[in-house]
Image 1 (cartoon, rainbow, N blue to C red):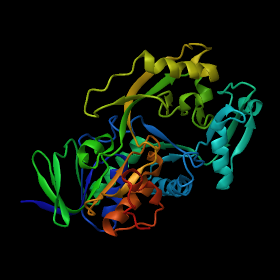
Image 2 (image 1 turned 120 degrees about the vertical axis):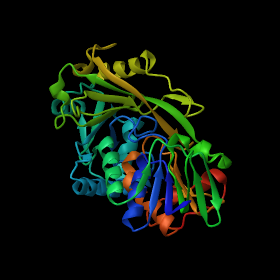
Image 3 (image 1 turned 60 degrees about the horizontal axis):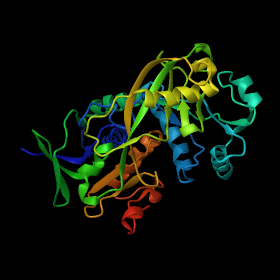
Image 4 (image 1 turned 30 degrees about the vertical axis):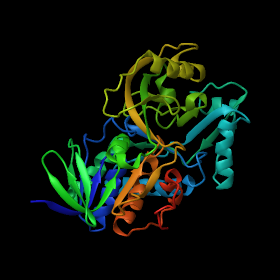
Amino acid sequence: MISSYDVAIIGMGTMGSFAALEVIERGASVIGFDRFQPPHSFGSHGGQSRIFRVAYPEGSGYVPMAQQSGQLWDQLGERFKTKLLHRSGMLYMGAAGESFLGGIQESARVHQLHLENLDAWEVRERFPAFQIPDQYAGLFDPVAGWIDVDASIQQAHQQLRLLGAEVVLNTPVLRWHPDGAGVRVITANREVRATKFIFTAGAWTGPILSELSLPLTVRRKVVTWFEPLVPELFAEGRAPVFTFPENWLYGFPIFAGRGVKLAEHLGGLDIPNAGDPIAVPDGSDIDPIRATASKYMPQLAGPPPGGAARLLDAITCLYTLTPDENFIVDFHPAHHQVILAAGFSGHGFKFAPLMGIALADLALQGQTDVPIGFLGLSRFLGQASNIRL
């Protein structure tokens, strides 16, 4: 017998978890599938934590969504009785007057965001972990911080089960096909029917929706944790989230005793198929991160050029990028009962609860008030967007 649901979701990691939660809280039935067991390292959420920021040089459309998402994270933390968004502040550092800081300053100016302008001496005095050169400056965003990824996804899944959602993990979806106004979803041992179907499959979106030839690139990224030479300078509450211009290196204060997390937002190796074996991190991945840390944070990594910090761990995760690095959130152009959310390009996690609202709106109402028109699939297909705002 084929079970029926109001909404089926492929991909129960970042966006799928929060979309499912929003759907079931509105009284609709939902089933979610994932080929792994989130949280995991096969998507862009791998690595324990993600930055939350509001001053957004990637595009002005993200700023109001980031502000609303921050409120949602705070509310979810209170509801789950687990702190999810840690507003440690975020410190951007770079050469004064250059584009790395300029884009952030312009975003803050346009949206009237409060950032603190710090010269190099002020940065070194206030945050002694960062020994930046005199020609550098800092921008400090007091409302930014980081999100506990693992707790967010785990809490969402726990709540889904309490509310009666069906979450089917470690189970790839083999096929899907339209069935009248609905969709049939087929796994190795089960077939279900849903009125609406949401794709949030991350790096597996392109192969599953091969008929659309989506312009998605899967990129291998490496995340590291180092044991600082002076740990107290990087303790939570003393050090903020931080970033430097070299390959957009970013890092976090010590959390849960795991050391200082460092990674590069830019760079990485493109891979043809997310299902292929992923190379484990090696010196070519780790040495540039260590060298940049040594340059600006000798109390973390030791003096340049190489530093001496002990590597605690290194893992890979997968970014799924669009050509313009803006997300795709839209209806399937041929099947209006199918919604896709993809290409979150390494900066999407912070928007997860708001994307959950938008996806539930599209599935249950056919439209949304969330301002996602600029994320439509039309920019790649050369046709009008299906999103009604």
